[in-house]
Image (cartoon, rainbow, N blue to C red; front, side, top):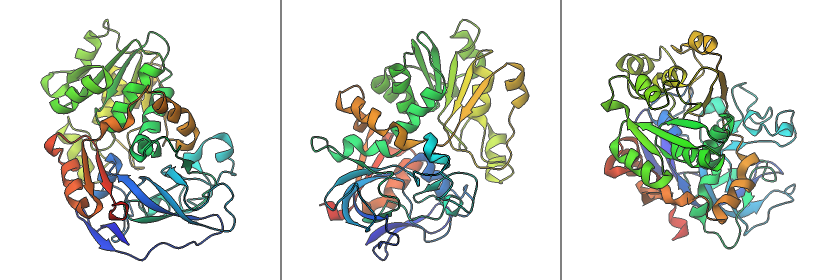
Length: 382
């Protein structure tokens, strides 16, 4: 099969690899029909995630058709169309039983950081990813969600990660009716966090980014107010001025470790002296009102960061964070898409064949051609 292969920092290729096989009674093999490049994949591409090994297949956002199932699989059969969460979860451990699928105890036993994740380095189990023609799906009765016959692949593709992640970000923010919410980052996760904030009752939603084309997209897609921090002398004070001098009730960090806005943070992150640039996270803590909530869904590495935790403590903030427990949200968010509340596939700006993955990564990473979201189409679907 063809698959996207990591060949070292800033370099991916499309190469032939052996087709995956059933390794466990609860496995399924899925023929991938759509897969996407996530902002988190760029952290891997740029060499910022530990133990990303040359030759691994990237990709944790995908959907497809079940080709084969192991003898223990009961809920899926060949021919079923499925969308697959990025978390690999056993469904029976202490954490899975509490809906904390991102913290599964059994799919990443070599690390206490997270569950297993498709295509996301050996720190999350070393599983091959979905930017390929086929992928092995462990615990196939637990994660995959069947795609209704009346919905197409692209309508549900982002249930694999970024829609649930944005929704969990808004949920963790504890939004109440009448709240003002600021979302740092107008990329795909940020866009879904904005739309989710409206779903959860926000009265006002403000997007912060430094790229005008992304802010324009956010205004059209998510119907939010926007501010470009590159045009601001002090983005924290400007956001407070926009919110009666107190600051917003809730702030969501949908940026993570590659934030712009501070040369010092960027240099320290690139030198691996901290787990990426914490510029956006610092701004969330400084911006939110006293007694407010900061929700973190942007990805950070495990080492220490230059973070104003003392400010958070003295302001009485609530900080909530986690990788997304995707499976918990999939049925609920599927209905929002089905009823027309959210146009999930509306964020797709570029579709390319899987064979053009290096070009797609270049477009997405360098934000060329007003790129918001790249979807890859394996040639087996043609």
